[in-house]
Image (cartoon, rainbow, N blue to C red; front, side, top):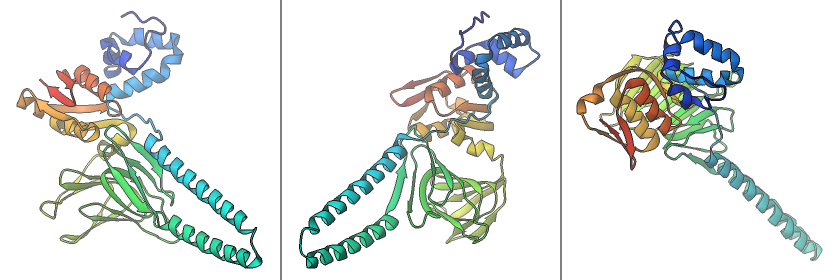
Length: 332
């Protein structure tokens, strides 16, 4: 191994080096002394080393960002408000030229217009959507923080930010109202989720809704099965096809919420489950050259914010022959 200063410029460079992987997986390996010495000589690379090590170990990264969609939506909303305000100023200035009767009429008109604008502002429905490969971090008007996964949507009326509709996958960190005990409601195509204050993940894809409760308390409401109170560490799956709660089990919540931090974590999961997640995020078609490979068991994790890096990690860490051709992920 030749480890010259500046040779490793990004995470991918480290993942290409077998000695680095050996060092992270086994700190007592033959590579340990040379890598530890190199790190002492190159302290500016410590952050990159840490992130690359997280990928090798299958631990989550945390790259938060504001998506272009969210920025554009908020900018359009601000411009609309400013344009409306300037137009009202012009109308008021023109009406000052007329008689006192005209002035009185103008004032009355302005009051009515302002009241109408106020009503419109608070009753408008806000809709946020993400494309394939896009993830959106945002904060609702009530202080609740959400992360909207790729190919998903979230909507609510401005005056009622604690009642939202969603499709796809969304992670919620609900702002708890200790004094008023005001609830937060999430509505999916299949069921209603009633929350007092908590952290949980909702995935409403593939004819089912999966709710994973990380912290706090959640009540699921369905017309067919009634209500169900969840406990932290539980996953409940509701089948939209059969209209029943199909599964209730204890899970490692980080394996279901790590996507929001840029990683897909899995514990003894078949490859087909991992690739299904990638298909949801990036809109790719999965094609197996050998059907048996779909049941290959994986442990650890892969970065999910970059499809290219994810593919390279699957090749390097799990010895898979995998290629991306025209939105098709081909596994041999």
